[in-house]
Length: 189
Image (tube, one colour):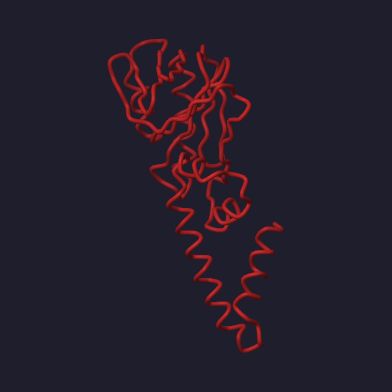
């Protein structure tokens, strides 16, 4: 089954939104971030850490894709047309004759689309909380290109538990007790 989706959008509102996301990214410690673009009925939604923007568009189909923010902003900025007509196939975004590799997910309806919303200057604890909440599947985490940072954050948590455990051992705390204490505190927040 060949899955497709498309959106036709005015260049200026899209460019304005992308520039706004870039300004926020520059104020953030996180660089080379991706933007998640979701095609919904009558609009597209752009999501980066801490920001979610909706822009009116003529759409066909429901899908989601991720692309580097600076890259899509540069592509849109160089376009001369007033309206931009994007089409999306499996892992491929097209604009006129240009093709871009993107991570895609297609949906039969837009009720099941979920974005991962993180603070602009998220810390490793925010990533650990996201992971421990079990609200998102591994596929959703990978789709949002957070799988590497999730692994790094979980590794840091394990190392921190080991450090605290070695200190607390003197007070007769076991590693399991320290781990349970920390995880309960993180999950309660």
